[in-house]
Image (cartoon, rainbow, N blue to C red; front, side, top):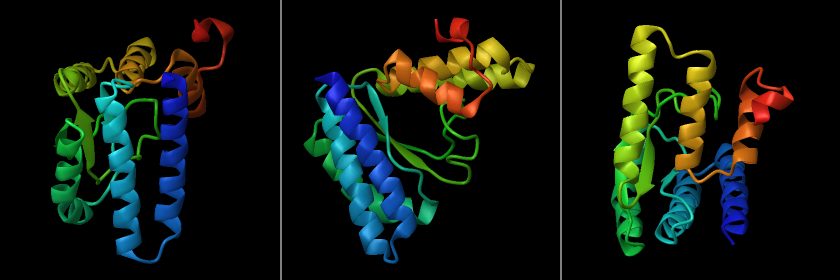
Length: 170
């Protein structure tokens, strides 16, 4: 069941990304983004994942949606955290949310766990150690937090890094 919901979530995210890039009206984008937020909030509420992320939006776009997004989250018994600086991991392209904001949808300790990963990434960056295995470990932690199964994390890493060998998939 979790895999089906994850697949539906990933499919919906892909559709939302495509529709956001092809639409001509901000109303359509707002409706699409709010629809994806509703889906993600339902998944967090159903314990499919501890944390879900909205699509990256400009601050102005986020300002227009935050009130309704918060209402949607509350109706699904989850919380919202407005993240202006999403951590960069090898799960997504480095510029995925550059200059944009995301909403972190969570319940329980989800936000605290995300902020802990973010703090550790920041510390590794400051020390010059956010490379190689340490960077991959942080990406895997973030992937697990997002509810991704190991094979999907591996696929994302293979897409965005030189990670390719059989031992890497262990």
